[in-house]
Image 1 (cartoon, protein in one colour):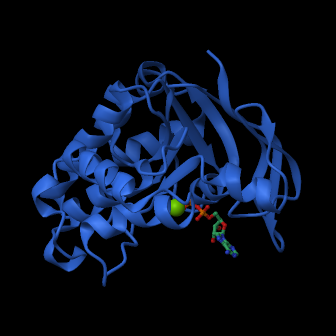
Image 2: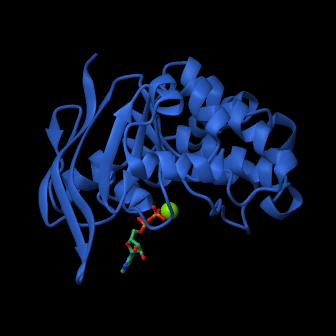
Length: 243
Ligand code: ADP
Ligand code: MG
């Protein structure tokens, strides 16, 4: 499998706090990696680091063989190749669903409006929201808004998607509709890094589970191996609390 995202020896500190410690992580093309771990272990920082929304102190991040530079145009371009979906959907409240999905391809990529609109409608269909294109975010449920956020990320034709606790802000009855969309993306071969506490999703969709604690990757295993026989005391303790 060709590596799409590669982190080598990545370190990051916030002042005294060493939040990412010697992170080595390879995500292959089409792979789904679920990242789990206690609160504060560095999962969100890891996501933001992959996209260079955070600077790093040392180490390299490579995207499809291209080392990410610290700044500049090339970074901006490479960054658009990795889409992000956050816990809070961050949709533009004063724009329709359709306009939200069209925006970045038109503004950032210079795509023609009618092309962007055709693609946006197609993506809204893919996440089951074709009939809601003309609505505003506030008229949708949380689960629907998160599906719009996924369509919006897909509109940039990213090589990979990062999800940071995409269902944590949702009412329980809306979680499955978002996970189903993610499952389908995984089946379609999208490369995904997913921070989530949804162990059912990890078991069924992940190729690998990465367990983080105190800024380190403690285990990097198959879901089967991790859930049935966690090796580290930290992972055993974590699993005993959530399962
Ligand atoms: P997780 O997503 O696993 O809960 P985070 O990556 O959000 O963990 O945070 C890792 C650690 O870094 C935590 O101790 C958190 O308080 C700290 N942290 C995160 N962001 C910042 C920041 N911008 N400034 C200072 N400390 C931060
Ligand atoms: Mg987090």
